[in-house]
Length: 265
Image (cartoon, rainbow, N blue to C red; front, top):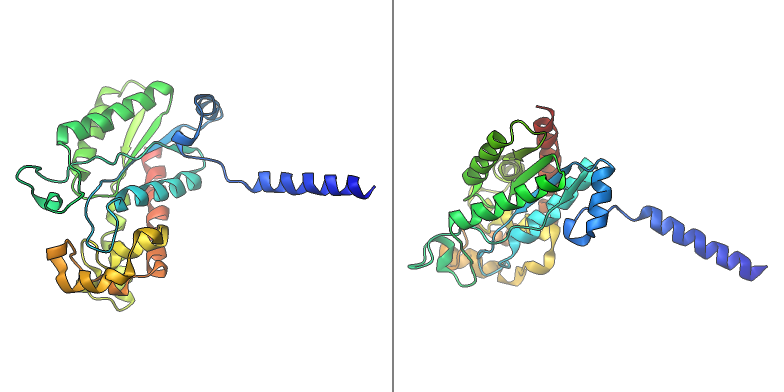
């Protein structure tokens, strides 16, 4: 009898664990059959997250944008409840290659032409429409290509006007990480010089909230001391995961709201 109870208890624990397991939202983790089943069950929205591979000072890994946009897109999709997340687009325009300009002046940055980038984003959107997704959402973690994403969405929506499919460029995703989040950091006593515009407290804290392994606090002093010479515009020394969570919560909540508004139009 004791053995029977042990088996039943084990089964119950297994069922509870299975019930507690969150639904997978990453397209690349699913089989084709699972995606088809999700579409039939009403998963009509897919997010294309766009990152970038660029330097972020001596204290933050090159994949910052890619890791951040994937993690945030996952949270956004889970909050929406009827969405999947396509693989991250991590090759983006980062400046002229030869001679190097912008972030290309720093080792490890990868840059592609605007034409190549646009072709990838547009091809991904067309593929997802072909499979039956009706709401294709573009979110970008980098500021440089925001106008191009807007243009791609407008062009495809014009072409697809007689179909149920739409592309939604959600500028709010990027904008929230700028002024609204910076306002919160100012309310915590941080100056604009500390907050920065690239790899400062704002940028670094967001990354710490999502993946601390990509941030090296022991190099904060170097980043603050050498500044633009090492690719830092700001001062990361006050950065923390707690400050980053404030921004993460804002980005997720406001992006979900913006997507719902776009879908209702």
